[in-house]
Image (cartoon, rainbow, N blue to C red):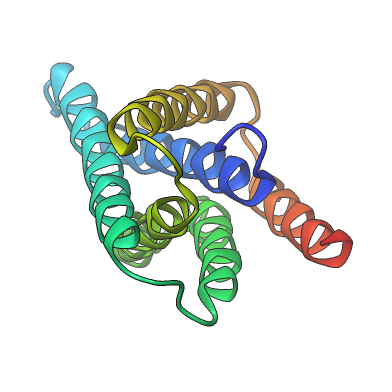
Length: 166
């Protein structure tokens, strides 16, 4: 589903970009940073996002649907888009806060998947985690190719277009 659910695809892709922006900002602003430190930070942030997704998946699989979950999912992509936009400014603490909020909001993506899951949750969950990690990694790599605050605006615009079409 992360590959065919465009709201989830946008979120995971954007989160990879934001993680990359935050970690590259740490290196740029602190040249004394150990070279392995950004990799460790990226890994930790990716794992935090995946853990949030797993918790949401488990909670969603044992509960019933909650009204408004799609609105929270849509809002999450705007939060991550704002984080990307803001990462080009000098407000690092605000960008880091938006990153942490975005990672927390991944819970709701997992929750929605948990509600929709049929059959074996473990097989579905593993496939979803692998695809989510791959999408975040692609976003992380794209952040090195496209270095512009307008990337955040483009993500927000694509989310608006998706909401109009849906």
